[in-house]
Image (cartoon, rainbow, N blue to C red; front, side, top):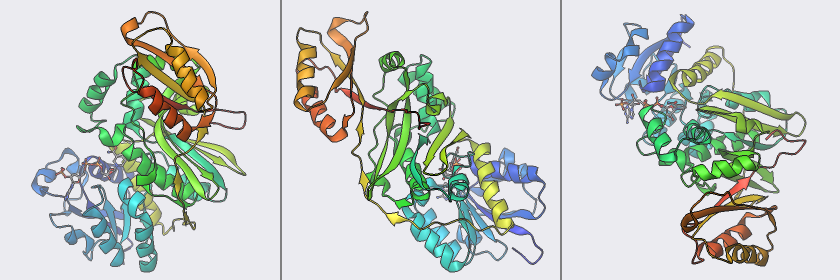
Length: 427
Ligand SMILES: NC(=O)c1ccc[n+]([C@@H]2O[C@H](COP(=O)([O-])OP(=O)(O)OC[C@H]3O[C@@H](n4cnc5c(N)ncnc54)[C@H](OP(=O)(O)O)[C@@H]3O)[C@@H](O)[C@H]2O)c1
């Protein structure tokens, strides 16, 4: 804070969230928080951005990050560029010279959080990242501060709005390719949607949540992530018959010294709040030993909701509030779970298929719960479904590999975990 009690902000990145932050700050009427410098490439283009009108005329536009990080008239660096490099080096340098840092960068906090928290602690400054998970939904401060007193044993939910938009549109009858193209046109999905649909974005967020909720440091690269791109319209029809829908769920829970963590499309009972999230909404459910289940929900993305979380972090710094930092331990990830599964096969129909599949499952000691086959499909390309009783995911994988190699199988079988809701669970 400067001597005049004004908190001077140096902004890195004037894109969707950066420009929305300028608008939210202007709307707050806070004269004690001022954007003094903005770094972005090609600043001439940014000066004429429609939201540049929310800035003070004296703001300095800069094309070198150092011009913000090292500036004497910057107390807090707000980073809204994204990615690991070069941003990681810039933020480390900013913390070292005594600037507070606020960021929405989930990859950086997931992969390099502990190192940066240590640099911040040594420099006696704050590193806040409330926008890094679930955008405008206050999951990060809620779990860190609001639930810091509980022992959380499981965290699960929907943390990728793009996947939720795609899957909830498919639930309403849309086709995967069509809805992905619509999401790209509407700006919800990138031209290369892999980070979203293959679970890369969600697993970074799951690691941040796991650190805060389970107090365990896990490596994002070790978290198994299953793509949603193999889910088809027919799966929603069968899921409905089972009292479920399909959502990309990110989930981690303690398992001895390890953390069971996974991201992927799962069958979610329609009685679970996770099934009720539609469009780009995010939803996180924590399970506390003493406090029970807590549900966070709201807009997980978009310039304005995300800027609200950034603004809240800046306000906390202006007020001199210190972030709660609880000790964490490194933990190995176990992708292995015991759960019931939904298996969908597309086959060229012939006698003996069900017996062949049942034979493989029996060989691996996997019990069948139900067999579903809707009428009206062509026998040359027949979808049918088997649900199993709870079984080991590793054993199931072996069985799937065996079944996938059978001559009548037209595409690799799809295996989706079925979330179980019992009386004590919300998710
Ligand atoms: N958008 C959301 O809904 C949302 C939600 C939660 C978290 N976040 C996080 O917020 C951060 C910002 O996201 P965003 O959606 O605002 O992205 P964005 O619209 O692409 O904005 C990024 C800004 O940074 C600039 N930039 C990128 N690389 C740069 C570089 N190497 N040097 C200088 N300037 C550079 C871009 O300039 P150009 O215009 O030249 O590309 C752009 O102005 C990311 O960490 C993202 O993960 C976003």
